[in-house]
Image (cartoon, rainbow over all chains, first blue to last red; front, side, top):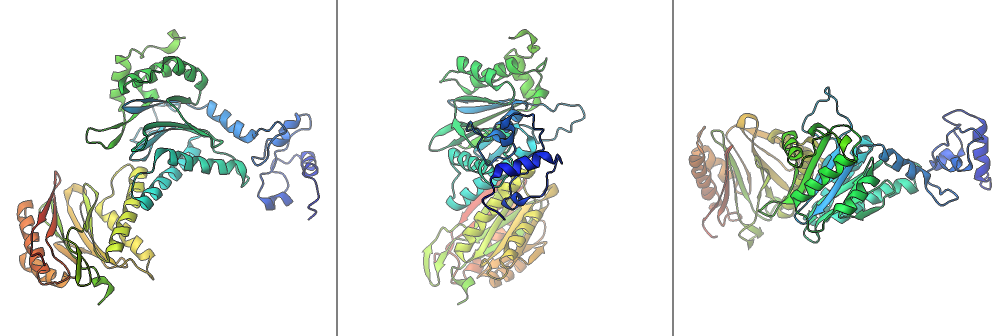
Length: 293
Length: 204
């Protein structure tokens, strides 16, 4: 087929045939995603929306940004690093009486004995990535007979995520993670990663709905030498201020901590609903959020 | 000399009353030379399942590491520990995957299942499971072990008596096998505790 044919021509011809699934075209062979049928009145940048594998003229990857939009609508999660542990807290969006609450959780997942994560975004995408992370951690342990360093695990997962922004023609994962873990080289660590595959180490971070508000409150109130209890208190306060819902009960939250037991092994502990209710009462955040700014 | 007899090993597991015992020798040799006298053949998968591997030492270690890999993923996904019967099926499947280039070891699996019922089984190097109600043996000293266990075993022994029986059976059998010995390593597991003991035997 004519390789000299400029791509723009192919796009124009697609716009004239408004079938939502597009025609099977030569581009199929390259495994690219079909572009959506868009009316010609839309702005120029729409042309670059549908393909993850190309930059827009402004140098942006729209699919990645749209993925981050999806996360901005999902339940928030906050992570706070303290000197004797890492605290992860998540807001549950799916709360219905009909929901069968077994031991499995919606926001917090264990990746290995020494690493756990909180999730914000599309849950089905998260499940795939969590499984990938678990297998990567075990592969490392099988090879080196020691637990995978936290940063390496995060990096390895982010490399997977990055692959979906550069080749294959598949959409990025619509998930942001907060990884909390401990290793013998760097102690307790907290990392945040997003759909682009970028990650960073943080002292306190927020993902999901209202994350900018949460991040700015954290910036003001975070103290470097906080203990785990103080970190839990800060996390509950920040979440109560930024959550949209009118009342804060233990059914809407999940709280987990990563810390060292006296014997020196890493423990990942998810609080039970009763324990959470006691904490909410203790820190005085069970009141409806309407009264806080 | 067969490759299964290269390093030398003796492993036995016995069923008691709501408990089980699993024991192995401690010698690691290279044919007739003894290299180590503290070789770990019995490994814990979780608090209620143990596996002991006899045969070629490198495969003993690698197979164990692969099983830990699979069990950890199982634990993370199912949020519970593996039952011993399930674990035995997993080991059998992993061994059969290498049907035409096998791991040169024979596992002995022992665990406490539902309702604290003890479970033991052994299999050959390509995964043929053999369940038993009383005892299972494996390794270079297996023939002596069969005889000793058959003579000394009785059903429904309590933990202390089970320990004595399995230790006597192990030590007397390895004394007749030049490739295994140098003491014993015995785990007696009840629903409430795991007791690990080292036996002093003939140091030859």
